[in-house]
Length: 216
Image (cartoon, rainbow, N blue to C red):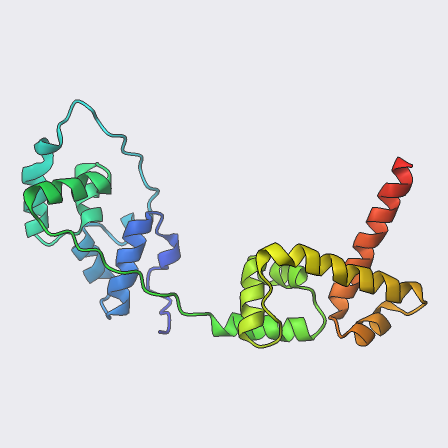
């Protein structure tokens, strides 16, 4: 779905439940003003910082029953009712259950992969950049780089617990090949590794050697 520059950027909605509801109605084609009216907020107010609403032990849950029932009947969702009453969404959910109001649990939709980012990850990896460098360049998590790389077919999935051992073994091969007099590009070509990975491994090996020499 294309993003209109006049549409609210849902990533700026600080309340996670409100953000999820907003994205739900956005996906079924509702405009922002209709979504805001449905959720009981203004478009501008949706991006306001979430106010802390600590529970008040002096106010029994039953005190909210009438208001929750009324707002629910008017079509407001759990998060919108919570904001109206300045309570936590969990309080509204409990009130609904007490009142016999069905609490719907909308299943989370699987996030669609960002194919543009995936393609860029594959291009940068094949150009010789290391995963860490790609993560830094694109401003994404290293784990996301791994996922995109594997999905794009330019890398093999390695379980997290095995990556340290695999990396250590690779660095040993890189250092050994470089010690024979090969340049970094030649080592990369020999071992079939990205040039950025080879350079990173050699820098790390030098830092380890220098630290060892200082402590001796």
